[in-house]
Figure 1 (cartoon, rainbow, N blue to C red):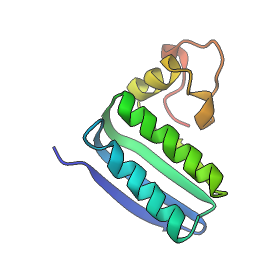
Figure 2 (figure 1 turned 30 degrees about the horizontal axis):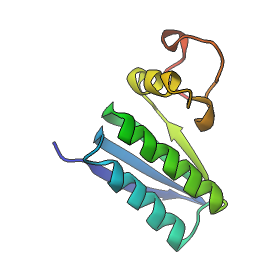
Figure 3 (figure 1 turned 180 degrees about the horizontal axis):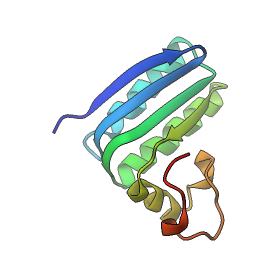
Length: 116
């Protein structure tokens, strides 16, 4: 299955819709796409839409963290939208849910709402 990144623009926001598995084989593509955006224009917001991400591993999570940090250094804000319950559990288990603006409390992953 191919990994696809679809880009769209809405004012000062760039939305990247990710399609496929975000893992060792594809994490670099996400990092490269965000880095290229930041190098060209440093948009106010970059939204990663994870609706169609079917799987994420530790490398994929690391890529999201790297993108978040790069956006912050460039004066942009990176947000995640439409994360699946699986991705939410992975971020919760690693203690990174709060980094992406989701509640970082003692709520169990099954109690967390799916949408943002």
